[in-house]
Image 1 (cartoon, helix red, strand yellow):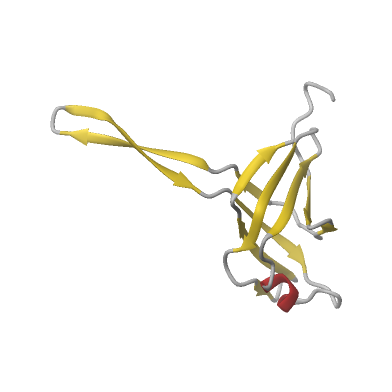
Image 2 (spheres, one colour):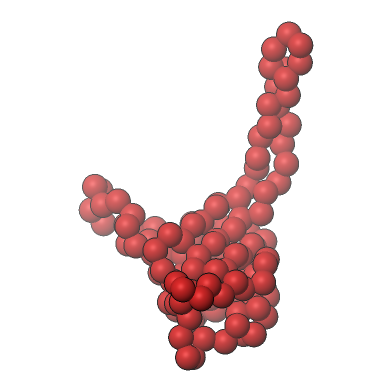
Amino acid sequence: MALNKVTGRVRIKVSGKLLLSKHGAELDFGGVKRTPIIGSNGIHGYSEETVAPTVTCSVSHRADTSLEELANYVDETLVFETDSGHSYVLAGAFLSESPKLMEREGEVRLAFAGISCDEI
């Protein structure tokens, strides 16, 4: 792996099936969100809450694209592969919002959440 290679493209697979993802996919690793606790005399510390890992992307809508199949994604294994050599597995992935078909762009917007995210 070239040390100076910067991620420019990704491949997203759901249970082994490659999605026809377009540019702009995002992975939020999830974990812990820390919120500062502020009092009248300054910052007292922080609180923590668990945040689910997520993947958002848009896929090309073609004649062989089934919105019903996409809407029924639950308990899937999602793999987010970067061209810089990193891969992440979103375990127990499910579609967290209904798929949104965009007419002019010919794409379907997808939002996944999962139980955990691990770098492999």
